[in-house]
Image (cartoon, rainbow, N blue to C red; front, side, top):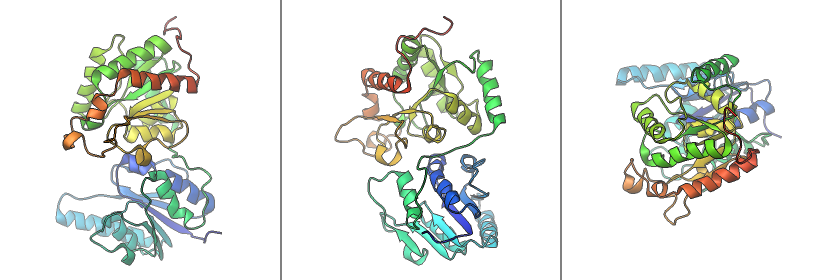
Length: 362
């Protein structure tokens, strides 16, 4: 039987995808302590992944002010606000010094953290009451959940869970329909690039994939990316190579509208990134294209998902591209269309989309 905690803080100071894979922790804590106050502390800009989550009572954001004085004021204000809540349990999931210090300064009597693989500047044993050993090759979802399994809690649901409001779906629907595509038309969401090119497959490969989805399965493709000129330009290049033009919504959706779009899709195809984890959070099947990243740690979590990745001895190297060139990964550049199409064919069988389906419009 797990101990009883009435005020719980969970800390994750990383990026959007990192925050998404913490959501099973919140669900399990709410199941075990239905009447407790449950809060999250995350980096400013990532809190959108936790808003509307029914298990979370309050979200604190950690931000930096741009100069030493303002940064100090922001941190002191955050620490004051955390201490006012009188937490009796803090769980830190980041394994960095900043999160460890915040856990300690929260004033929580019980503080659980993960042991670091590498020696940190600060001895984590001084900041935590409980340190959980890190396991090499363990998926991040499982690693996070071990912090509460340490308390005797058995999670009822291990997969990520994300939420949005009806108005987010309505606004997304309007945007889709403004592009001439019915909301009721089956479609695939394709997320081809994130920030730098080392995670991206080839433009011509993506274009052939869009054409293949249309020709063989009668499935329209909706391309998405961030509102960034490099990313939207990359998607422009894919669209220009396509026979039948897919819908280009790159940079046109809010995060919650994107979440609603992905939930509506029959399939999500994309790279290792936040949107891939968003798809797992709304139970949309995922076909992920991986290059140098570790799928055992960061692959889409759950049985409904598939990862395409070269089986070379150098994969995964975890570098930001070959020789740390952020623009290029050979393992992705030499991933063939035949390899990708074979995975798509198998995935379509799994989700019940017949081959040679009639094209849109009859």
